[in-house]
Image: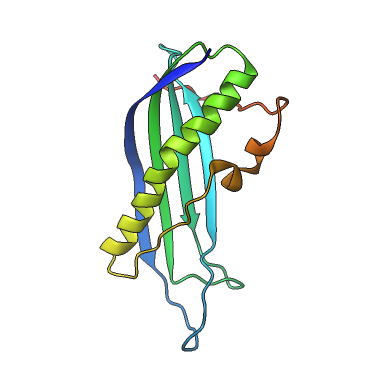
Length: 149
């Protein structure tokens, strides 16, 4: 049975920039959240696994945003008995669920520190953000081939 514990969480990148935006008063603006994730395994110690979650908000002409934002949080886990693709899938989903609240908090803190109305991303399960997690046993989490040292 797979076992893992969280060793640490770091904010690898926090970036915020206001953008010029023309909008009529009382115009509702949709914030274009884009989430991503990556898994890596330590080369010299395969028990150490990293999960990086990131959020990008960038406006376009069709869907302008009052700011651009990039936040990347990385969780380091010690993992034992991860032998099968199903073990990797379970670890990936649970590690995502563990790191996601820290990503949400970083987004809220960053926007509050920028002296704008704090942006609070919704509380949702990882399967709502990463649809591939909804799949059954034939879904495999691919670890990034660029291993860490």
